Length: 127
Image (cartoon, rainbow, N blue to C red; front, side, top):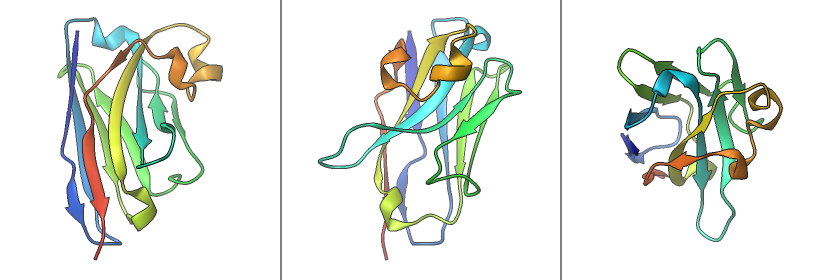
């Protein structure tokens, strides 16, 4: 199982970045997926989640309206489009996968519910 996150970098406030997460070694289309982030000295926090079909999406209040999560099951890839970036968005961003099931819809934000994790990609928002 491998999750490879990429696309991070340095961007000015108000700018945009698009993160990608390439998955392999498991049946991507049957897994719920999510993005989490961790800033220095802070706990890992939920950013966004998407159901295995892509129909249902969920966001943390801090990113709602600015970030968009999506997936391409044909390409085994997860995305996070980040717009109107703020300095407080600075963190290492991780993609994560969990087995499908009805519990996804109530526990999508729980870091302990995810089975597989990527290595993380750094996003820095600074002028």
